[in-house]
Length: 237
Length: 329
Image (cartoon, each protein chain N blue to C red):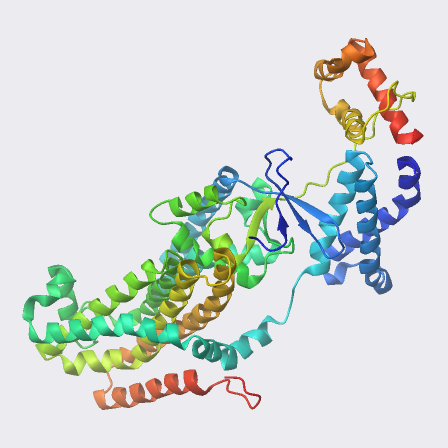
């Protein structure tokens, strides 16, 4: 349906992750932004627009006749082109920026001017009959959370990639796991070691004790042993 | 190769790529790296992508894969963005692109024109012959206001009597806000199976026909027709073009042909956008003519002359501009 976008295979869990294969032959993953976060972004933008309208009205009262013309033209520009200006500039209106989301093309490149124009002009249809009802229904019945404007423009709204500091797994001795582990199991151990320090001590131990039956260990020892296995996987293969 | 060895070997390259990407995000004047380093970016980026693919296929740790994915994700838009040249493109669009787009979609234009003109003519004839037919599309208050606006006793036709001449600018702003807004809505609501577009076209056809018929019946020829005939050339044509754009959207949803609906919609939307943007420019020009020319107190003969020039200008522009020697139609 959407050129180039691959659906997660049926075996993979239900997720809002979408992959796109770029010309270099690797997959890019995007996290789709759902209706709630987008509604919040719209709310922030609506408030900002309200302030702009007020500022325009203020100018009118100061300038008189000519100011009135400027206000009306300003109203027109804000009503139709407020999102376009920001999206062309950096992919997100102030509201979207605050919510950490961004508009991109289906193929992961920045939104083009014409796509931005299409998706924002079609707000007039998405808004009908009131408060983006048509847009919401459309978002809920397709897999990419696209409103009508996104469908016509070929755009996606995704979470902005946060530049994360990589957490190094805690340094500990390496020891070989007593049994042969499949690749999935090895990855799970690695993920546990890398994410462990971001969890609370209790949660860490709770997770490690899922394997108590196999390791025969509980509490701190269970965690340390799994760290040691992970370390062995990192170094010893 | 072990993950730690892999990381130790390639970390310098990844750091360098991150640096180049930081640099490419800076404004042109503030860049610190040399031109050669930036020109190396595509090659480095391909290397990075292969490292990312390797890390995934060898089952390296999620954090490493995440780090590489982050770099790949950041680099992709830098390599594949489109940019620049909008002034030239706008110029070319006005001179050739827009009229060509209108001619390419002349069937939609014809259909849109029919949906607008037919109700306008019928309603116009009806209102000319039948006194109270106008109340089917307007309430009494609106009719009264419209009558006073075009009363020959009114010095400035098209305005209510109480408005002064300094409001020319204000009306210019109002026409932009109102008319271009209507044009955009005519286009956008076409995505609802074309129903919104048809409704707006029919309703505007009925209303405009009713006003024209009614005022002609009252004998306000001297004020009404000279006022509307000039800017009408740009304004009505532009609304019909917006209608054609809306019908293009509607057709993609109703009858996508040998494509998926989404694909058809995307292709038609790109075409329709050209029509809408061109029509918006026409409406801008129409607002200017309506505010500063149509309202001036010139003799009707002069107004009719300019109107004839404007109409033939619009028709010639849309039919002839952009026809090139190399078979471009």
